[in-house]
Amino acid sequence: MSDQRKFRQVKLNSRQLKVKKRKNLAKPLYMTIAIVIIMFLGVSIAYSHLSSIDKEIMAKEKEISDLKKTKLALEAEVKGIKSSAEIQDEAMYKLGMVYPSQEQIVYVDISENKKQLDVNNNVFLSPILSVLKSFTKD
Image 1 (cartoon, rainbow, N blue to C red):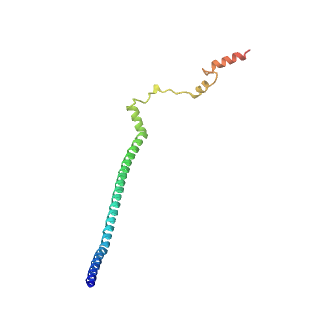
Image 2 (image 1 turned 90 degrees about the vertical axis):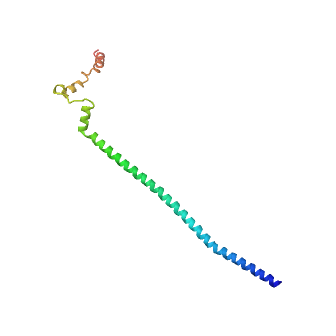
Image 3 (image 1 turned 60 degrees about the horizontal axis):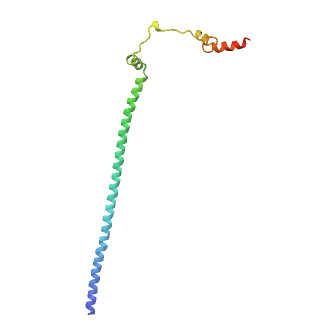
């Protein structure tokens, strides 16, 4: 019986070896599959990140083009506002202003203004001066 036992033991060991070989062969396969899955997930995440960045860039470029259009429109508006012909047209047509006629123009002599600035001719200071002079006459 000992031969039979040995035979069974050897048969059992050979079965165990076959199972171990199968397991050892399966390990690299599982590792390869796991690495491929991890790489696929990494590439997918990177692609989605690049896609979102691309969308942001497109939105910013659209915003820049809109702002450039607005800038050009505002520059044209400022140019129109600064031109004297535009100001003249607006004054005449919107505000109803007209150029004065020769009869409406009054020329002021500056030398008369200097006399009026004199303290004695000033309407506001002359009463005060007369009161002060009345005190000093005594």
